[in-house]
Image (cartoon, rainbow, N blue to C red; front, side, top):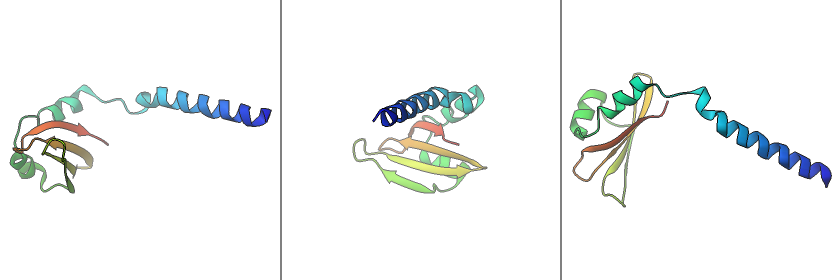
Length: 94
């Protein structure tokens, strides 16, 4: 029983430590954040002209917009649009 409690404590400690250090491995650069932010307010058509068609487009029933998943020049992006097709958020995931 003691061994099980010790193993659980070690597992929790390890999980908390890894979670706290996760930002240290891939810090987002200011340049990449501004690159994605430049898409906010633009039209979905402008995005398609630049990056092509999305790998996946998922309708969002709560907002009426879409989540658009792109892979472009070795990077992965997720864009959220409003019902009119304007980009409301943009994130580079990898």
